[in-house]
Length: 110
Length: 187
Image (cartoon, rainbow over all chains, first blue to last red; front, side, top):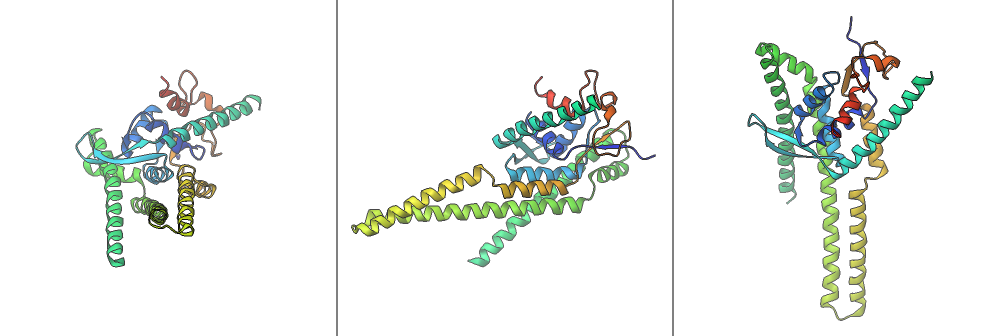
């Protein structure tokens, strides 16, 4: 039997990335790992789709990137949050709380 | 002159493409390294890393397109800033070197236009217009969601299951993985 999956709302990945980067600069692989670890392996990022998302967020000015050395002395591209990114994170978090709160209310009454 | 610019643009574009591929390859190598550390054979580790990553060429192409668009926007912005400086320079020069009041007035008008132009550029840079926001939203709609969460109920509805509060995704305080991630920073 195929492994069941739950689709999450659009924009959740961007919010997750912004939140993960709020703790400090990370490269793409570390972002994937951090989301997976924090969610105790429940959420898994489709690894290839992370990068177009990162590039779009960079274009929006929410994050900025800089090349640096990784822990194994390899060249890696590190992403960090910008001021616009912090504002976006605050907006998206507020929106998420509003939507999830509304869904919870519907589920409680249905 | 235009040939030099064309070559420089091609070189910069090529450098961007190389950087994108380097970044994507780094990701796959890191995953392979972790797979090997977890006990997989190297071939198996690499196969798994590639499989998890998905279509490398498609991802690379998409990243290149986004980068190219960003480069174009940056170049347009630079050109517009350049025009502002030229207008400011011309205006100041006319005021400083001319004794004719009409010419000095033209200079003053140029400076005023340059200042207004600069303000418009500043507003455009700090507040992305609605068209750009809509473009971003449309792109996000077409983008693969990127996050998958194994569910216990097997609902295909696209939303969290009604019984979500009892799934393995929630901790003993009843928080979902998303809520845990959001709360992590506040601790």
